[in-house]
Image (cartoon, rainbow, N blue to C red; front, side, top):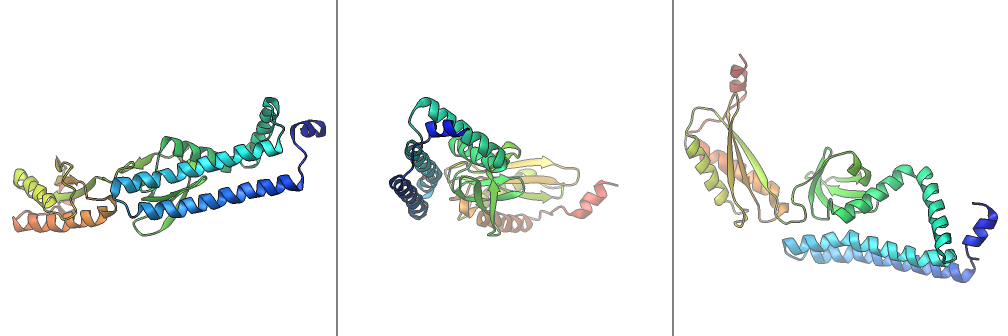
Length: 269
């Protein structure tokens, strides 16, 4: 862009324009900060589905505020004509594309993830080796808190290359799977019934969803997968622990033997 072209596109910027732009940016920044504090505070005091819905609106509202600020500021800098806007946006886009390739890629992926709702605040997601609850969807990264209470920032551009698994997808319900491996010689129907009773008597169980016990034979054991839903997704680890402890107790009390490494070793001989 040469000097003559720039003078045709850009307005003359005086102190009044600078003050106006600064006021807009400060106001939008304060609104975004207020939004990111107030809505999660309100959401954490609401029941499951309402909480997740309100949390999911935070990045959408933040993106809307940023776009509004952009649309207000640009006419203050550029002579408002279609040709000027195209030239300005094209120049800025090319410059950013070369200078901040990865950063811009993450920003674009962030907009895509917000639009497609790939993950929202309150979702439990697996991105690569990272599993945890989405706490904040920023413009460049998504903040995930793992079960070990570690905060991990994952760039949005992982969206292009890595499969993303969303366990609850905006719902308060999240399926938990608990595995049991029993020695092959036993009454499978009785074992399945016991595990169903274990799930039905859990204090964490949500009764509006089905319980399933999937049975499959392996070369060294009978594999039982107990599938059920806790009342809230945040209870998933307490729920799995409860099912595991009480499931083992119930099976042992009925004389069932658990498979171990000995069975696997013998099966390979």
